[in-house]
Image 1 (cartoon, rainbow, N blue to C red):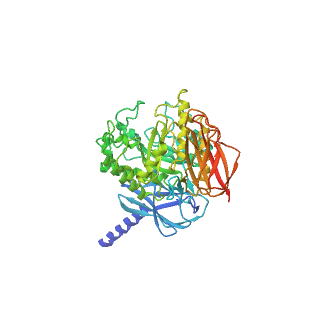
Image 2 (image 1 turned 90 degrees about the vertical axis):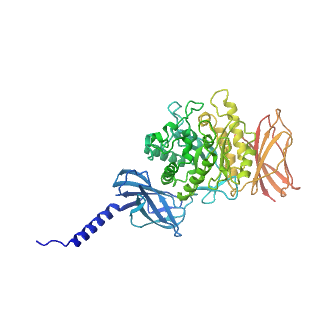
Image 3 (image 1 turned 135 degrees about the horizontal axis):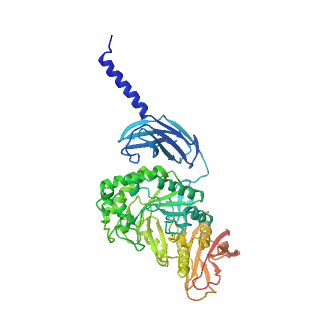
Amino acid sequence: MKTMPYYLCVLMTIFSTTAIRAEISALTIVPSKQVAERYGSVFFDINSASPYSNPYNPDDIKVDIVFADPNSNQIILPCFYVFGNSGASQWQGRFTPRKVGQYSYQAKVFVKGAPEGKSDVFYLTVKDSNKDGFLHLNPKSNYFLQHDSGKPFRGIGENVCWDPRPNEDQKYKYEYMFPLLGANGCNFARLWMCPWNAPLEWKNSGSGRYSETAAARLDTIFSLAERNGLYVMLALDFHGVFKSVKDPWGGGDYWTDNPYNIANGGPCLNAAAFFSNSAAKEMYKKRLRYVIARWGYNKHLGVIEFFNEVDHAYNDGDVNTPAEDIVSWHKEMSAYLKSIDPFEHLVSTSCSHKTIPRLWNLKDLDFSQTHLYGTTDNIYDGITSFVNSYNKPYVTGEFAYSWENAGTKESHPTFRRELHMGMWRGMFSSTPILPMTWWWESFADNDWDVFKAVSTYGNQMTSGSGGLLTPLSVNAGTGIETMALKSNNRMFVWLRNNTSSTLSDSTLTISSLQNGNYGIKYYDTWTGKYSIPAMINVTTGVLQSPIPSLNADKDIACLILKVSM
């Protein structure tokens, strides 16, 4: 009996092993469509035969789709695990093309950092559309953001930070709140990921693993936002995840359950170490990658906010993180997030009231953000100060008359008034997102008229502005608070009686105008109704108009349009 030479046996073994390995490593990729619209989403289902221990750990296994756009620029799209087992798993890539033309794409898998397999190369044809794309800073004006298309955007909305907890009224879920916001002209909402609301990475999911239940809920929330025309600022954490001492409501002491706590398998001996421990930073970057992989494609993810009130981890009771650690952490994470995000989302974080030195100087934090509780009398000056100090936009992420309950019958009128005043003063301030109230449940059933009146006027201010507003000097006489802006051939003015008595003979005066005919109509800021327009002929460069009678603390707005020379 003849035997095969030894060297042939070795070669056969090598070829056989290589063939089997190639088969194991192969990826298949199936797109939801082969022809897409610009700024329309495309999902890619990917089947992998590669082994892994933890599919949520990209150091263990990572799946990317590599695109070449119509200009041959490379785009790396991170993908996320859907289901399956080691050796037989399904992944998904979610993509929104931003250019018209033909894209090529190929899925690739990496195991323990090494290339393991790839799919064939396929092509996606992208046609133009009337969609506007993602939100970005507006280089021309801090009063607006702008879409990819160049269309200006100004956020009007409120916080809707979580679904009701078991001890709260179950009525106020996102399914209830988002349609009401959309129906009343709002276009923006802020929400949290936290231990009781879409806790993606928390004790129950295990260190370095993510909750599919939380992720699925967030999928639903983004679908609701999109259907109701809302853009979302998503806060990935809140300060309570570092605290061991209860807050005034008897909770908020979540460090015990934090997956970064060494007691739960995490890398941190204490909460302050989160901002300096290298292993914790790498762990957090993996979560950022998952966020971009799963929700980055969605145009209605308007802003990614790292923390709600991160200053509570700085020089605050039981957590005293050095300022330089918090600033260094935000510098590293904001740069990393922008490096992996093919859609260029806006990035920020927030403080309650304390200033963390040099935090807002970071170039990859697109705007500064603090929270205001108390009167909004000085909100214009506060916004202006932040804008001038840091040369970037500023946003009031939370505001209300008080951080304590607004829901009592006695307190509600005061909170309602401050809601109104804060939004109107914000409208005339240099901010791309109007101040957002905190007490969403307290205003959910009786106060949509406030939002509707603001949105009707505010959306007119945005429409036709070309993304540019500039301050306008006006005079309304003694005792009237005035704020005014102009864009193109339109002027917007807000007037408030700042006295304790009725003013019935005041005059609005605007100088240095071109001569010609101007139409003016006054706007009731509470009912959302305009007066009958009046025509004013300007012959000396000065427009004068009698102001309707204003009771004490009453405010009114007006719109002035130049109609002819």
